[in-house]
Image 1 (cartoon, one colour):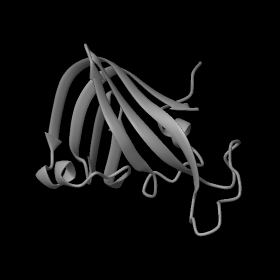
Image 2 (tube, one colour; image 1 turned 90 degrees about the vertical axis):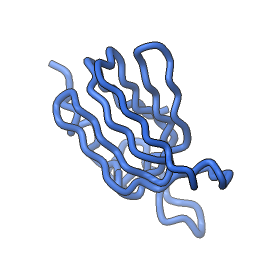
Image 3 (cartoon, one colour; image 1 turned 180 degrees about the vertical axis):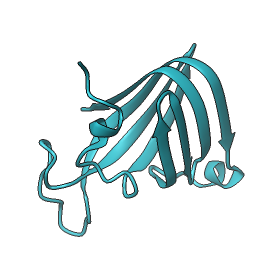
Image 4 (cartoon, rainbow, N blue to C red; image 1 turned 45 degrees about the vertical axis):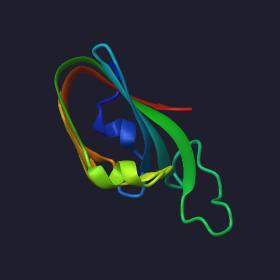
Length: 117
C-alpha cells in the first residue's frame, strides 16, 4: 500500500517551504517548490551559511483535476520574485488548498503526488 498524502510531507517544513512556479497542462497542475527539509529527512544537508533551511527542489503534481480555482494576486505579478512564501497549506483526501504570496490555489484531484528531486 502507498504512503498517505500527509506522510509524504514527513520531515518537510511546509510553513517555511516556498512556491517557485505554477504550471497548468490539460487536467494536470504542477507546483514547483523549494521544500525546507528538516534534519530527519533522508535528503537533508546542513544549510548554507546565512540560510535557515536545507532547501531542496521538488514538485507537487495534481492529476485528474475535477475542480480548479486559481486566484493570482496582482502584487505577485509586479515583482519578479523567485520564491513565494506559503501562508496556509491544507490537503484533505482529494482536496488541496494553499494561500501564498503568488495567490490562492483550490482544487480537487484524483491524484496528488509529492516528488523531491
